[in-house]
Image 1 (tube, rainbow, N blue to C red):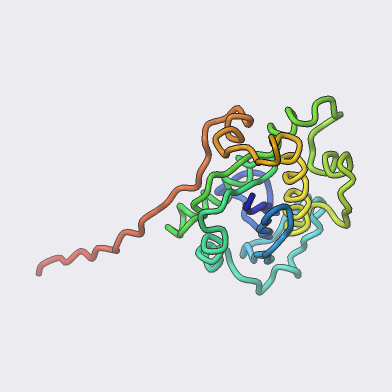
Image 2 (image 1 turned 90 degrees about the vertical axis):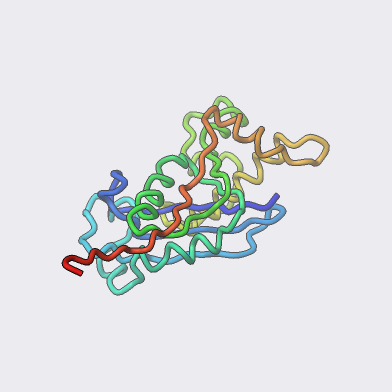
Amino acid sequence: MRFVAFDFETTGTVPGVDQIIEIGAVRFINGEPEAVFATLVDPLRPIAPGASKVNGIYDNMVKGKPTIDTLLDSLADFCGDDILVAHNAPFDAQFLTADVKKYESKAPRGIVLDSLPIARKVFPGLPNYKLGTLVQHLKIPTTDFHRAEEDATYLGHMFTQMLKRISVGGQAPQVANLVALTGKPELRFPQIVRQPKQMDFFGV
């Protein structure tokens, strides 16, 4: 199966108010990482100390990096129509959706799968279903957590292991069945058609 695992680090927890400060997107093909889109993002505002404590990203690291409005189209092009996977996907998706709407930009076109509820069904009985717990349970080699590219890579390997557990005869499950396993409606990013800016002419 081909999919893009993605993760964002942010200045806080409120989409549309807090900002994305790091993007990590890793394309997996047949269980192996094949391409990466990863960058720090300048939020043009100070990063709260609490956020920096979690993700280890500080103001001096993002100063002068690309701003989110300059990255959205490139991220959309990277993801294309591929299936998208995130852990607790609605959280990350809301941040990207807020920026896509704000800047009327392109967005990834594939279905967004939430690996969290799928993991609860595939690996019952774990103490919790944080990404770190699942990665440790599956003995996936790790370095740092809470950095976007690393977390997206761990997620891709974890999702690959889940697919193997629920594959039948070596065939990965249909996307519709994976959506059903999440117990949630199908999730996609909005596809916005830029409207030409109209000029008002008075007295002409």
